[in-house]
Image 1 (cartoon, rainbow, N blue to C red):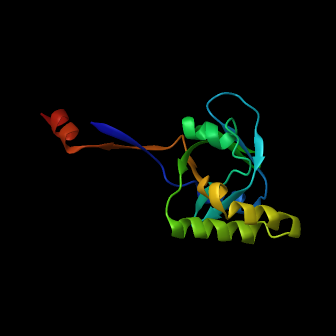
Image 2 (cartoon, rainbow, N blue to C red):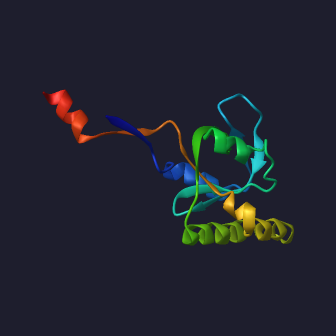
Length: 146
């Protein structure tokens, strides 16, 4: 049986654009909703975001129910899938990335909030939705060759 596994990384050009830009648009779900402004950080060539408001109908809650969506990075709109982030070392690196990228006095209030509790736990990773790797199990390969 074949399994579809989402590609793990955006292209280096997209990652560079994300690292150089402070504000992004996110649209949660597969519908044509408007884009909402969020902050995205890059860690190890991967893109992450945290939700400030954590509303039941906010972008993070919608992505928990349906991980499909899109982000606007510069002039590009890219279809994404969202995944929950686990692991304390990765969470710590994401927190540090927020403090480095958003380092103005007024931004530090939000960085402190993103570093704690439910907001920290709201971290999602965005991965490209349009690129999939199809993996076949051994039983599928043996069935197709007999």
